[in-house]
Length: 210
Image 1 (cartoon, rainbow, N blue to C red):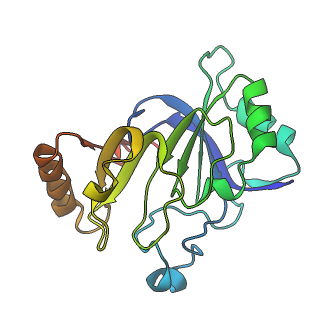
Image 2 (cartoon, rainbow, N blue to C red; image 1 turned 90 degrees about the vertical axis):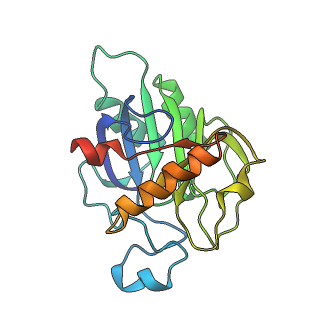
């Protein structure tokens, strides 16, 4: 199959358990919870998304004809002398497109593969790091993985309802926007009251890196 990619870029992971780790980000176009168009936001399942995943016009974006072509482009962005190759597949919703042929092609090029998903689509085998971010009003299909990261607060979603799932790490992340300071206070208080949970911050926004 071909792959519609919004952008590919090399940076540091900015949030969650792997904050600070160098990674190539592959942002797939499209999502199953929102069209990405502002005129549709109020009717979307997820109304707070802060990412542009519409189209294929970002850096190194495009329609890649097959898994090998996309894996080669991702590999070309990794430093030539760098070890510990790491790619983060994100979106939008990456599991609309991330499939066994691409996973195989990335592994063949020495990459550890992470996915950031809303958890509404079953995982293909072979992904090395699974981060799930549930959304209020959406069914949760992926109930096990490495990290459960919930953007807070979300009306109709209680993080504690997910605490018994099979994840290695549980974290809450303040929702961005005009109420970010208040949301950060909410998240800090929640973690202090529930030590099973950890705080995730969007450090890429704080530092100004991509």
